[in-house]
Amino acid sequence: MSDSNTTSFTNPSTFILLGIPGLEEAHGWISIPFCTIYTIAVLGNITILFIVKREPSLHVPMYYFLCMLAITDLGLSMSTLPKMLAIFWFNSRDINFSACLAQMYFIHCFLVMESGIFMAMAFDRYIAICHPLRHSTILTNGVIAKINLAVLLRSSMLVLPYLLLARQWPYCKTNIIPHTYCEHMAVVKLACTDTRISSYYGLFVVFCVFCLDVLLIAVSYTQILKAIFSLPTKDARVKTFGTCISHLCAILSFYIPGFFSSLTYRFGSTVPLHFHILIANMYLLVPPMLNPIIYGVRTKQIWGRVLWLFAHKKTKNFS
Image (tube, rainbow, N blue to C red):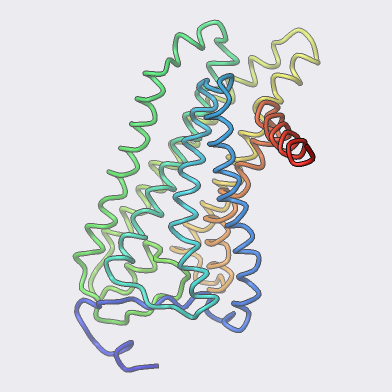
């Protein structure tokens, strides 16, 4: 390895992403499931957007939020996977300093945005189940647009200090990042100054944003469960709860590995580095793949439309 990677310097022109340290020999094999996940995520989320756009009956709040989630998942996948696969396939480890900070910003921005969308979708389920007669008057198109705008502004403004702080630190230790992407704390740890403010602000975002979102989601579902158990028949309870299952599965697949990844990076000194990086990758890659599958399979309108499109195309080809 060249001396420029380890000698002292103030502001590196490039960082070097190692991929998954300790598993370099397996990068080619690891790229296979990663590429598969990426393909499913992109195709699945584009399919969701296409079907909702083409089907007028799906132009309702739940599917507007689902489209916002699909756009966020596409952004998250495209911010991470192309460079990851370049590392695995072509050993292209260099990344420009500004490009690294931009990737860091967009990754964390999309993560905060995804959390906000889940909170908005929980609010939609609460209104639909607990106040069904007022659903259309409360969640108008204007209100939905304002909610989506608020989610976008919140994520972009909260993550902006990540970028501003990381840009101002002097980097004189090394420019080697033992990761597959420019994760916030992985970059900040390379600085040769006191970066506690970045660490503390990162924890603030984790606990005050994600924990707040989880708390509001929990409150919404507590009220939803109360309303479900008050329904007169078992069939009605099962049917109503069935409309929430896909949302709950998506929430669990997003938050559980997210909290684990964030906390182990700061406090899990005994966790093997390659294991942590794999978990961090799964946290970014799996939800964008699972969300269109979960919502597509569990939602009759979307699944029915997908089957219709394939059947229509097959009939057209035979004719």
